[in-house]
Image 1 (cartoon, one colour):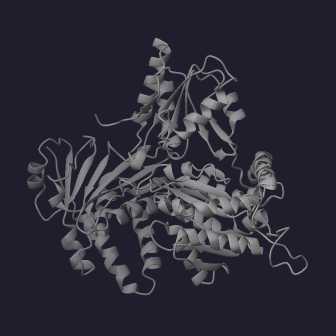
Image 2: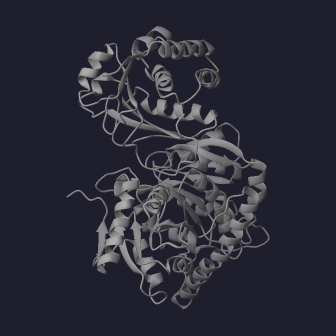
Image 3: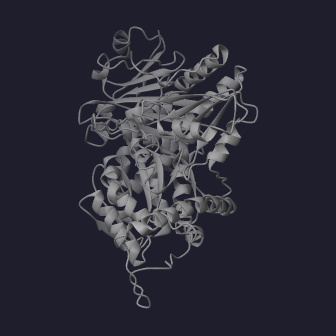
Length: 393
Length: 194
C-alpha cells in the first residue's frame, strides 16, 4: 500500500532522504542550493532523523565533507543546483575515483551568465564526464523513486560509484503534484544498512585513501571506474526490478512512449517529456505516427536501448536543454548520434537546443519539432548543424 | 466539474497569489483530484507582478508548461489590469475574478476586448473585516472555487477548516476569521455579463 500525497519535487526528494535517514548530510544552506537541505535540516532539528547535518560554507566543502564522511564509512548525501554543482567540480571527480557511493539530488538550473535562475540542463550535463551515475526525473514521483533507488545502485559492491538524481528546477522542484510515497519501514528495508567493505574508521584494517597515483597505475584505476560503470547497467536494472515489486512502478534506462510503430520520434530528458507525451497524443489523433524516447539514465549511457528504440523510425529529433558550443549540437545529440552510427541505417537525425534558462516548453513547441521532422522526411534534406527551438528572431 | 480546469493567478509579490495557487491545488487534492500548483519564478520582489498557476484534473497531469489558455483568471490586485494582459488567452466560456471594491461594470470597461463573464469580490475589505489584515488570497480562493465550480462548497469549507486548524494550531482564533472570510467571499461575489 502506498500513501497518496501531494508534494513539490523538492519535498518529495526530502521525504525520500528522511525515510532513508542517511548518516551524514553536508550541504550549503543558501542560494544556489535548494529547499532540500532546508527540509532535511528541519527533520534533524525536530529529531525526526538522527542524520549528522553539516552546514558548510561552499559546495566545494559540502562535497569534500561528503567524501570524508563516506570514506570514514558513513552513508553521505548532499544536494545542490546550478552554480553550486559547478563549484563542486574538482571534488566530483575525487568522489567518483575514490569509489565513494555518495548520493546527491541535483535540481537542474542554468549556469551564469547571463545570470539566470531557471531550468535547463547545463549544470549536470557539464558534470556528465565526472564518473557519476546520472538519473533524470520527469516529475516529482520519479524524483522520489530515483532517489530511493540511487542509494542501492551506488552502494552495490560491483558499482561503488556516486549517483546524482536530477530533476528540473522550478518546473518540478517547486510545483506541487500528486505523488505516491512508500511507507518509511519499506524504504528502510529496501535501502538496507550501509556497510562499507573498506573504510577509514575500521580499527581492524588500516588503509589509506586518495594517495598520489603514479603513471604506471593511474590508467588501470580509471579503467576500473569504467568497468564499474559497465556493471552499473546490470545493477540499475536489478534495482529497478526490485523496486517494481515494492512499488508497482516500472523503470528502465529509457521510457518508450508510442514507439512500436513510430515513424517520427523525439529523444528528450526531464519534465518536458510529459509535455511531449501530450504532443505525441495530439499528433497521433491527427494521423501522424509520432513517438517519444525519454532518457532516465544518462550515465551509463543507454546506447543499445536507444538504438533498439529508434532503429525503425524515419526521422528523430534529439532535444538538448544544454548548449555544448561544439558547433555541432548538444551533449544528448552527440551521444545519440554516436550510438546510432554503424548500428542503424537510414534514420535521419536532427538536434535541437531548447528550453534554455527556463524558456517555457509548450505542447505547441514540441509539435513544431515534429513538423520539422516531417519536413525532413518530405524533402530528404537534413539541416546541416542543429536548430534552436523557438528562438526570437 | 469538467475533465480539466486551468486557472491563472495574477498578483503582486506579497499578496499570496502563489499561496492561493498551491492552496487550491491542496484542497482539490483532498477531494481526490489530480493537481498541479506552481508559480512562475523570476526576479520578482514585494509589489512586483507575479503569475501562478493551478491545474485540476480527473486524470493524471503530464504537461509541464505554463497555462496560456486558462479557463479562469484570478486577479488579486485591480491595478494589474492594464500593465498586465490579464485576459490573455482566457477562454470566453470561462471567467475572470477580480479583487476590487468597484462595480463589475467598471471593471468590464477596463477589460474591453474580453467577452466572457466578469466577477468581482471585495477581497481586501473582507480580509480586513475578518482577519484584520489585507491578505486577499483567502477570500479570492473562495471566490474562485465558487466561480469555477471546481468542487462542492461544503466539502471545500470542511477541507479549509481542517487545513486552517492544522496551520494555525497555536492561534485557533485565526481559524474562525479565515473561515468567515471564505463564507463572506462566496456570498459577496458580483457578476457582470456582456
